[in-house]
Image (tube, rainbow, N blue to C red; front, side, top):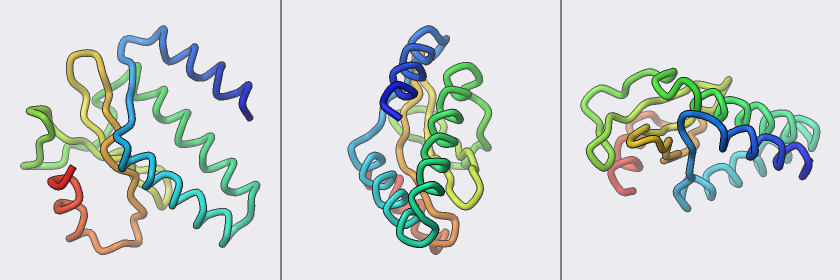
Length: 120
């Protein structure tokens, strides 16, 4: 798994955009992976994590892939949502950097999402 991450990171660094995670987004990711592991097993968690990282690499090439979150900005950039099965990645792309703002379980109350984005 570590080797895959190194290859993905090296690949991402050669892209048009680089990416970074907010600390809170990393916490979100860890919570989601714990949930998936607990409910569906370690293999499902590994697959979900690999899928998310692959989609991040997609964002490095195509930063506008996600759906625009109407009326929401982060640091002056429009916020976008990329749906990955039951998880969504909330991000913005600006000045060659894609910032992962949050990792969101789509089964949660959607009214909370706006508050979470604004708090970060």
